[in-house]
Length: 398
Image (cartoon, rainbow, N blue to C red):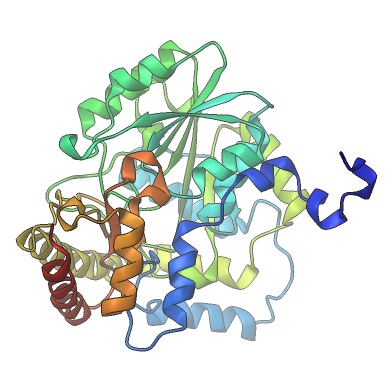
């Protein structure tokens, strides 16, 4: 017998269909397991092990002592927006008006959410490469959009194929979402690929969301280019970035979003009704980071590069095929040599050897058979993690 809707328990009908359709984060699950165990080496959550640079911390303290404890403009402090504008112009040759084209957000995560909710209508399609960061698909779904995946493959070093992107365009396609350097794979966009993606966006009149939170973390001669700096792209690109990764400021929760004034005006509506403004103390610290922490960023990037070479060489030596990541701070080894799928590999690795990683399938179907290992932890811990993984692989090699 069918129970009338009114008699179905409230707890079973309270959540929206969109929320029910989205699974919990595959990253947080294993982080929570690791938190209950001793002697765990976590290669799971993508968070720098470095502390925020001292002078940036002092700027935050000084902000509090000056009693800067009130709201800022919805857009953020003008001083920080000016510094962001000058930073982007200096590094990438693209300039935004601090008054009307830059919004300070609560981390890059809020920037992603705002960009999608402000621009997506129900049924609009967004082309997204995968594997990709776990929050992208839910953010599109929560905004009412439809994701059209473009798969990338281990055999191609997880490079994004512009021809596959072009083939995914339909009459309902509104936008292309790019997250490069890529979490979880560490893949980047070579100039020729980026140029062709820009051509496709212009030819099809697409909006482009470009999450460039890892822009400062690139290796091996690769140099990042802002998507909005390419010809014809500034007027159609929503550029997102932040301070969490390069400046070791995850807990400060401060990021930014840049877009043409007409687009940003609508995005600010969503921000002002939901958030009001990013934390004032964090904004003052972020300003200090932009003005004083360049040498700190470079020192951290160089150390990540050293760790990158250790973990990639180490995993390959263990028979876990790993391509060379050129950005961010993740390795994405293929684990099929063990005979385990990625979920079983991660679960057994943490239980048997107390090393936490994330199954590749958490980032999309193309990630199956891989795991994500974050090398934003100390060199010594990475050496120990490789020793433990070696023991594990030795027991499970098929």
